[in-house]
Length: 100
Image 1 (tube, rainbow, N blue to C red):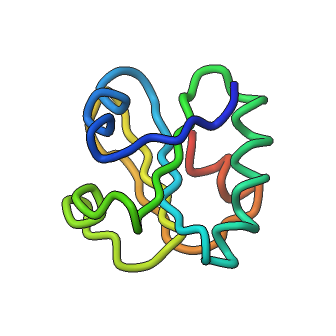
Image 2 (cartoon, helix red, strand yellow):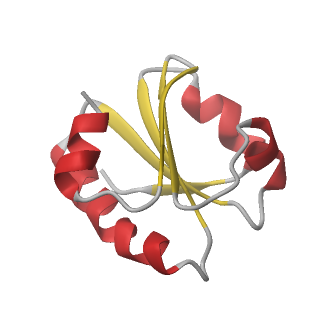
């Protein structure tokens, strides 16, 4: 499954069912650009998780709601409830562990 771009308006709808990872990023962020292909790769391997990305510069409401001060920030939800949050670049093994 591909990683789908979402916005503030869609956010609550996409996180409400199942396990969801949201990659909060900005286009100018170097570590975000390094993380994106890893998230893409894992999204193709894990069919039990839905993967989304959110540009924090264009979607300030979600950033404020979840206290995102640094990027990349990964938010992991289960049925709408925030289960895990990680800040900074993560390699594939670290990201896989977060999703367990």
